[in-house]
Image (cartoon, rainbow, N blue to C red):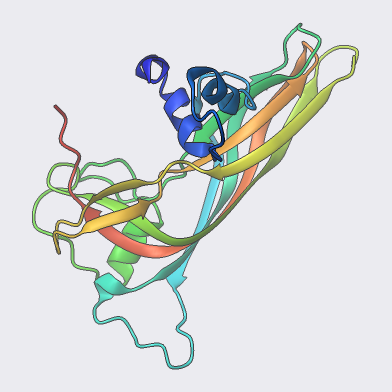
Length: 233
């Protein structure tokens, strides 16, 4: 808990970790061991994209499955793909340089009234989904609440400047970023599993080796929701 106050990565990793209790139970030292399977690096947030693509369409119903009662209950199949700039470099330690990166493709543009980009805004306009009263970014936020998800992240572009001395490049793992929750401003009900992007664990070996770009393909099924902005105290 003290470490989490200074680096949110610790709290994230603690929530990522599955703990199987056994004698003598949870202590400071063995809890630290749970986190040690990842290199202690702060999260690097990627915001520059070389290209973004998306597809969004109503999710098909199974035979006999009741249709949604309103457009707000509609489930959507959303596919996001593209290239994000990582710019992750190796070091001179003689071993792999590990880094966890996080990125969020454009879903509905920035949280302001001028935003028109992203698949969620397109679907809202295309299918006539009524927005709640008020101003986006102030009275409500446009988000995507997930039922199912399947992300994928791969190497997109690598480079080794000089002589290759045991150079290596890896995407070791990928997973959704921790989901958010909020309050639906229309129904006043709690909304869970709000998509907040994807995390990937990278590794580079050799001091002049770089991972420049990552490719991604993210398949999601869920609902378009309008949630209340978080209260900042």
